[in-house]
Length: 185
Image (tube, rainbow, N blue to C red; front, side, top):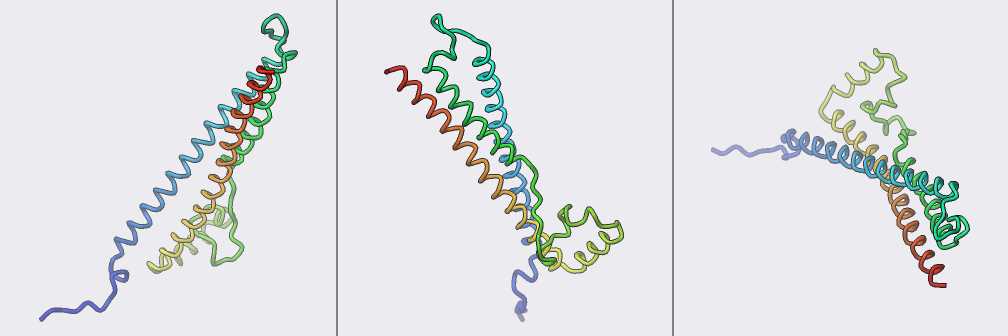
């Protein structure tokens, strides 16, 4: 006689759920790392460009007998890169800057996220964790809440990073265009 399973796969397959949470958490951490690395790169490139342009413009270097700052075909493109680069660097730094997303409702808070427990005493924290560990559903609920908040952090980082890269692209395009226009005139 065959036994008929009365429970659904979701009720019995805890390893599938745990794998889902593990893979999702690893993906989110990887995406956060990628965003931070990209923000570091765009910040470093802009910082180097800004320093070099300021040095060139303030040093009185000359090209063709006259100082660079007297030749519009150099001053305007360098000024464009300087301006857009500074704004791009600001957005990249904002993407790197930690931002703690605070849930307004108690239900929306994750016990696992440090900003929700660092002001609690050790006993309060342990009690909260014991409550979470009282059932698999409570654990899964906390993991989902934590993943949701990580997603909000990711959305913010990638939005700011997109602006930083767009500004960097505009700096290059506008400075080259302005150089060509002024040089041809």
